Amino acid sequence: MRRHWCQFFTLGCAIGLIAGITRRLTVNEVANAFKKGAQELLPAAMIVGMARGIVIILGGDQADTPSVLNTLLHYTGLFLGQLPETVSAVFMYVFQSIFNFFIASGSGQAALTMPIMAPLSDILGLPRQIAVLAFQLGDGLTNIIIPTSAALIGCLGVAKVDWFIWAKFIWRFMLLLVSISITFMIIAVSINFS
Image (cartoon, rainbow, N blue to C red; front, side, top):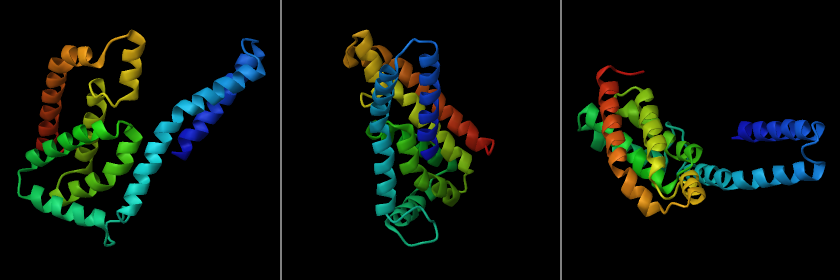
């Protein structure tokens, strides 16, 4: 996360310098634009920080130390270990898709769920790349329908489209994407994707 802030700051300074040299913006306008951009990034940074705090409260993400997180992981592994590998992989995808509703920030979701999903894939005998694939599909594709996605709601607001109208329009396509995602998860398990 620190790297993202450094990149944001460096790019903001570089673009501000270019805007100042080309006389498109004054120094005060550059400062105001930078402040507005930082303000828009604050909610995402808060979500990532809170997600990391939850992981720490649950005992951290070290697999070799006793913690609430490792206990949850153990019992989830016992439950899923009784299921076929493909069903377990699809469950991981469904979990990530549902979880994306509550934490729509990709980096926040990764910070909170990957400490659980990566070791869970080890317990289930699945390559960790399958846990990453479940995260990418679950986080990325559901953003086109969930009402908690700031990007979606922002775009719908600009286009002056109500979310319910959008959901009625996109739900069939979303079902197609879910079907394709589940197919990819099954293929990934069958070819031992790593």
